[in-house]
Image (cartoon, rainbow, N blue to C red):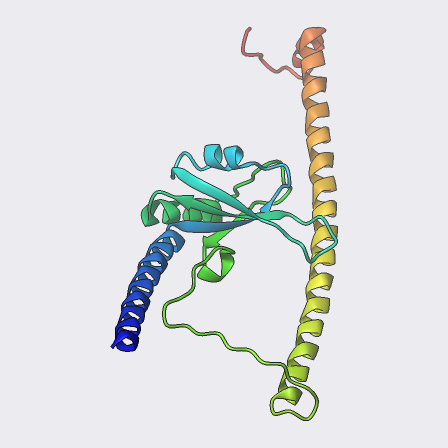
Length: 215
């Protein structure tokens, strides 16, 4: 009788745990729907900068930056940004994708998309999902398939690194072009300001028979 009581108690506890897991995952899914993924962020961007930048369309509840531990290069950062509701998340995604939206001085606009469950490092276990693993060695069933998968992963890693190198080179070139344009425009404004301050603008207007606004 005691054994049956223990078994019944265990079943009851398991049922409670499963219901709790279902509730936690439902809450997590709701959080995912109101969270957006932003990448191409400058390393200098902070959560306060993101919150202020999105204030026109959304109230930022939480910002979690995604660390990169696998690539040796300093690449633009990414973040998961939670807002109040789904409509605000949609408005933020539309804003960043439909208009050039720059944060923290990056030479290229940031990109945004709705978050996915796989992006969250703290995602809870999905109810009913069981994960099983086993060690395999040469000659075991599935060994050849796993070996091919490892080769595919190495190839994808090499392709990813090549793309990142190319992206960084493009970023460097684009930043140089933008800096050159900025300096050229600044020099033009300085020249115009000097012409106004030293009176040369009046002489030029008389020479070309142009009427100034203050005349």
